[in-house]
Length: 221
Image (tube, one colour):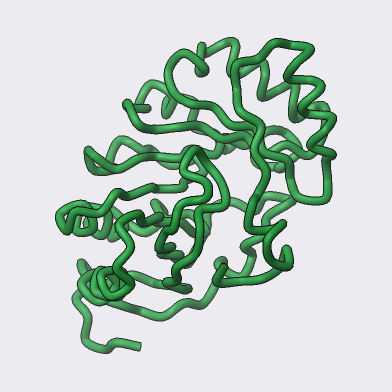
């Protein structure tokens, strides 16, 4: 743990590691993951509860240097909820300044307007089954930019129908790529495939690739 870090430079970090992207339109590409501690939500199916507490204090420059040392161009800033730490914004900018392609995975419960231009937001809107549907900041839909995308994690038919209706109401599929993902072990992806075809919905079905390559509870992969 670093000491004597200025409050404006200090991040609470769970882990920094290299793996392949397991989700989003960037799936399959080598990527460095910077996982920040803390989250303002408590989704029922959360697979990252270990991020809620703990983490080591590290400076922005230290984190950027760890990323640089891995030599991979694609970086994802994730959590928890990365935007819950205000220092996440200068971290993202620092990574962009070093020439990295930066993905920011966020729940959509926090204003994404502060995410630096050039970063790609992956906004994870919460259906009813998450227990956090009321936490969605739907104004974030109007803050989406070219290069962003929206993800829905589904645990039931109700979640599917809610997500389908949001996509239709806001014309999301005409704004950005939209992905429907099944909560691992809770909903059969084959059912979602059938529903998408029945509704002729122009969204992508995705699986959490890393949970099929490695044990579902594995960390750092």
